[in-house]
Length: 160
Image (cartoon, rainbow, N blue to C red; front, side, top):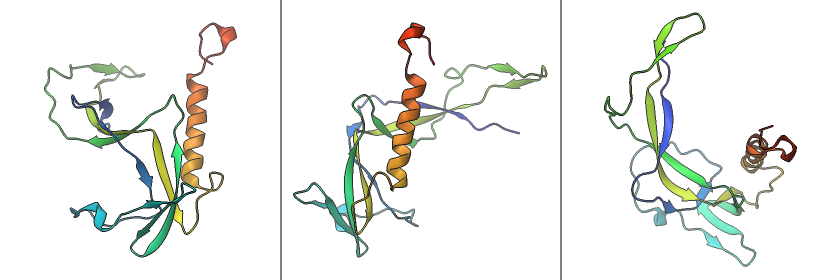
């Protein structure tokens, strides 16, 4: 059975632009091209820093969530570039039973945009971090990341 390719994240020569990610509570069943986004997406901000937008006649309210200072987000796009054989050396992997196999092929994801904040939208009311599954999952992953990458000072640099 063929293994799926391993992915690497590549930054192109041109630095990715700074962007804001919008998490919308909808599913779009369209794969074609679109006209200018201003025709259907024009959010406004009030004095309480609450964002309001209308999408297909439905009112959405958004809350801006910032990533912690030592984190950054990336929007990635998979590009099917052809890799030369010089880029990926031939590697043979020997399994537990002594079976030989080739190493998985490398695929590439290219950074399109970097972000340090995202807007989480919900229907008719501003979302609450304790209830919203997207904000909760981001907070949980940040905790997991902190525990994986943190070091105990008593261990003198050894990981937990």
